[in-house]
Image 1: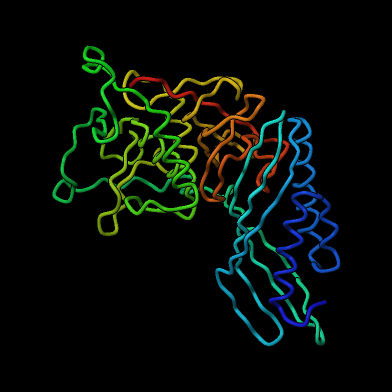
Image 2: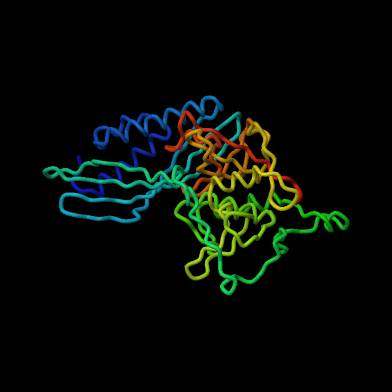
Length: 340
């Protein structure tokens, strides 16, 4: 097939880019011997095509950048961790849209005689993995080691939140959806150094966006309660499970409360607004593994979302183009109130 492993990898990336428009995974058959992956990719492409047809969205241009994150190069085999940076432009009802995504895969390229061929492709399917699921046991912090006390009622980031009126500002603060969106658009493919970054980072990212929009933390000092973040102190991780664990944030938003971060469950994605949250339960068993934040809408009024782990920008909300999606997938749609 190819005289060296690099040629095989670059041709593979070129073909994957074409697939975004032409949509036939069998084009990979002469170059990739991994039938299981090709079937998986074909299913994903068919789902994405069906979703686009239902939306009346037509892709017009695809661009894929390739980054080699690591290489183990041996005489007869190369194992390559690569990053595919996708940018897809599409039209819908006369409007132009752009979606971006960063996907990671591990390719095993083997040599047979003088030719190289891709023997295995393993998507790094972060959208299915969970962080601390179930959460590890809570270990109380000894009083002498406890961090400085912060009031346990919700507090507000005064540097982010403006007042919303002389009288109302005494009681309420606004959820600034524009700031939540701005933060999500700035950091969708990056890591804010002010926060820890997790291998499964989707919920940590959504929490950062909510906080940037003015959602008040509720610091309890207990990881299994409240919604708060303080970072890391030595070997102790100082953040609530609801801040960074997908199912825990879903549970926190679903719980009624009179103050602090809260949400209203709506039953249709077109009822959401910028800065609202969508939670994903891939198996339909009540355990949510992924969260996204709404950052735009398409021509039909349906949400486009930003996310981490598989870094995504203005991606269509239903995630049928994800390897994690199954026919059992269930969603929860949370509308964040305008005032806290």
